[in-house]
Length: 203
Image (cartoon, rainbow, N blue to C red; front, side, top):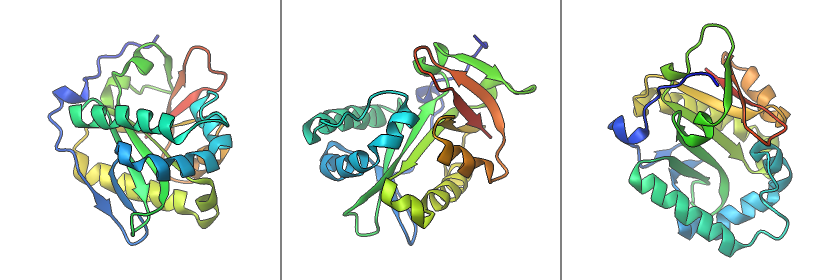
């Protein structure tokens, strides 16, 4: 395992943005009240989310109630400053278009993983790992690229991280190709136990 001394978010004294609005979408903290709209986006996108998640989630019988429980947990973690989850909604805030997750690089999922740097990069130079997905029906509109570009500006301008990584799974080839069309470059390969596909960290 590659040595890591990253700090938890609670020790970074972050000023956490509560909203980001563009002409095409809004990011705001997800809550349990988003269960129905989020569930619709998740289930529409379930086939590629399983590759992205490297699990059976969401199962075909995943319910709105189960999703509400998951979102309540994310809402608590957001409120506690342990990790931050934003729903991506249309400007009318009716339709869920995707989701964004910010995790500390000292999270257990990373401390228990086998992380290999590519080159001389140091894991502890990065304070956050950022994941995102866009619902299946919006991939054809290039919304994923618009969200990626917006996220990079937002993270650089408003969050104050000394460094952050954008992370995806190698088996989610559509998102890998999207990221590699930018000037971002692979910095780390992250292997989690029990998962066939490795995660890739870009900066």
